Length: 213
Image (cartoon, rainbow, N blue to C red; front, side, top):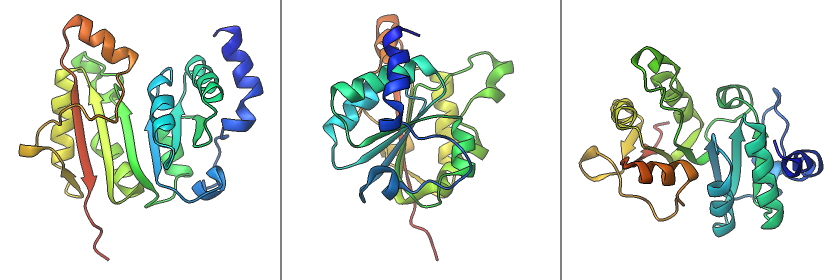
């Protein structure tokens, strides 16, 4: 962690940070307004998240990450861009979703380049599993979107299979396959590295079907 990142964690956390715990989160209180809520899980160094929050001021953005240098980097960018629609948590996504995130509160969930755990014996460690998808579905509003991107072909096809088998979700891509690169998603550092290595990036976009009361 650089000195600047450490300074950001100390000086800017009160402004942008949200402490993890067990109390339910109230997005209106967190952001001081009613607006669509976008959750990004595992934002890395935060450059893409800061860009999206900056170019989409009408939405509220909540980022979850456990890597403290990346959080520090994002806080510096948030300060430089004078963002008012961004909040950050240093916490495990599953714990936050289970303990603190209200049901039916998320307009979008974005997960860009999760760890692919490429070895077959490690696939059970992958984030995108049926149980995790079921948890996300519980937190999405009707019509809320789940957007995942990966440059690991095996992982992409595994994710696509899991989501296509989830009855509460509807694939937004023609033919129930992958989506073209959406304009709202800026390239991440990992994506640019993947391009240099010749990897194909897969975008997967699903929407929560309307709930039947």
